[in-house]
Image 1 (cartoon, rainbow over the protein chains, first blue to last red):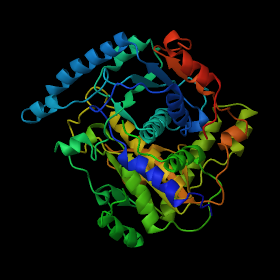
Image 2 (cartoon, rainbow over the protein chains, first blue to last red; image 1 turned 180 degrees about the horizontal axis):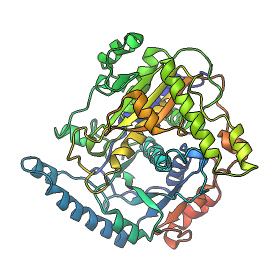
Image 3 (cartoon, rainbow over the protein chains, first blue to last red; image 1 turned 30 degrees about the horizontal axis):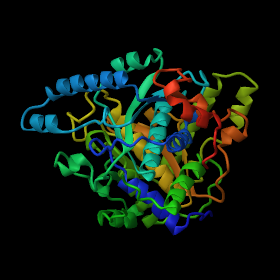
Length: 236
Length: 236
């Protein structure tokens, strides 16, 4: 049995997990140092990938014309999506700050290239989406690494992937997975913005854990952990 | 500017990133304690999610009949996929140990439920896949948390999602995203198994980073970081 993390090391890890936020409004103008950015990208590149295919690319962006195009796409998509709901939700939604494209010094588009090391990739012939999932794991590594360095990150998913592909000149077969805004911040807030705004609540752990089958919440063989989870302990 | 991680805390975080492995063959029989499993699930549940939708569920599995069914599906899919390649790759592929379903004490199926908090979820009307991406971030949190606790995790993507859905009685609209095998191990190997076996090499960071546009590897405005990345520094 391996026990190789000290309590202090574990503390550092869980601090990253619980204090990571989706940042839209606390960016400061300070540039990200090249060695720090490189360190964050290195952490992303060490994510797991199906069949070790490493199917990700990271496009670093600071060009203002590119940022303006993406920001415009965000505004169009936000307007379009606001028409899907009614007041009072609609007004609330419109009032939310949901991106920091221009305020953050570095934007990163993380892409998925299914042709890399293909066509046969171990683990991808039964579940083709597995390649996309690997790219998401890389994004989460990147996000957590940024947090440990004091750098905020916001994932913008209100935009047109078609416009993003054209703007960044992605080939037809390459899929943009995440558009991320990174920069130093003056604060990491305690809770997700949408929780603070009363948009949605955080679920309890007991609401998302089942035993053996879908929706099975009571199972004799898992009695102790059921009790533990019901207590909704705070590990943060 | 926020600088709230000590060097020791950062060290712990990066240790998790670089020593995490996709584990198939080093499981020992020791059970996972309920409080540790609960801690790992809590870390997963604190992943980012599009529009704070928390669209994941975690189905904990130790029932041997369920495990046997999934193992059978793995074997069928491995056989089927081996027919897609020719020797010598085929024999090598067949020889690989690619799952630890029966040897690991706990299996977890992580699912995506697009109806949760829906139909309108902030950030999901332009990019519907964003919900799936959130579930992958939760899996990566879970994986890293397991690593800090000395618990190995292997993601099995050679299986039939149809059989998995039937076995776990998932509703039609729920998508199984990851089937994970967890248990204490007697070793975390230094490098990914497929790298050690010479199946694929790890790419250099310079091979996956572009500047401003797709395939742009030389850009005057990113000169310093280009030089840094070319050195392929080891942050592990």
